[in-house]
Amino acid sequence: MRLTPRTAAAALLAVGALALSASFLSGCKKAEARKEGELLIGFSSRDLSAEYTAKLSEAIVDYAQTKPGVKLVMVDAQSDVQKQFSQVENFIAQKVDAIILNPCELEASTPAVDRIKAAGIPLVLVNQTTKSAGDSYIGSNDFDAGRIAMEAIAKKLNGQGGVLMLHGIMGTSAQLQREAGAREVFAKYPGLKLVDHQTASWDRAKALALTENWIQAHKGKFHAIFAHNDEMAMGALLALERAGLKQDVYVIGVDAIAQALDAVKAGRLDATVFQDAVGQGRGAIDTAILLASKQPFEKEVMIPFQVVTRENVDTFLKK
Image (tube, rainbow, N blue to C red; front, side, top):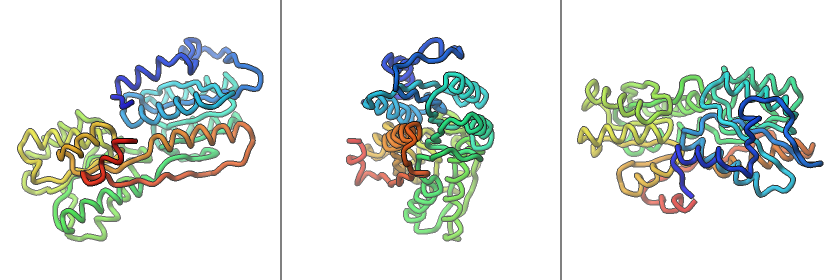
């Protein structure tokens, strides 16, 4: 099932089988009832209103349900660092056997990680990192995402042209690494010029407004846009289409969300970089179970990114 951010958030938070109990969500520190021998895993999702995060969370939820003797309690941090820290405190009070954390920010979420480690609870970081390491990290190399996207732009432009870059929330690990990967490619191609770059905070509406401003300020000076995620790529795409300029500008995003894949297939969006939410979600659950059971585990599991174009999009639409 392919979900929008809103329907995914609603569906995930409504799944009774996950035991998202009212007492837990309201912050009650009463111990979660569980069967003897059952593993209780706490999962704090960064923000279910973001489509990729919703897809990742859905994968974690669905896969946990296939594991006998495992009970998953999921909460949504709504991109609020303090809320996520409070959720961590509640997980600790609940005496969970392991925690899966999808951190809000690189630095600001570090205290939450340190608190979990001080409590001695096994910790899996998924999709984003912090300054402090968990016991294991499951995700993809965001440096590669930036590098791959910019290499696609360099190929399309034959190494010559102006580029705009839409950043995610500044200071998040994905934003920092995707920018670093992109800048490596700029260094390889002196003919590629970074005309402007600003944050649109992973948000489609903000990317739309920012791109409209860029069209006024830099019209004729840019030939490609690299958006750090597909939500922003879709906003930039709409701004270009409204201005009648899309045919002159190559647009690529990251994540391969449903709407981006549809846009690629329709020939509207040039490309996206596929990030495997299902693979990351399943890896997070498997690793949390191994940690809680004191079994051998991988310290780091990196799932490769892949470029999606009109030529291969059908393969990804089936996933």
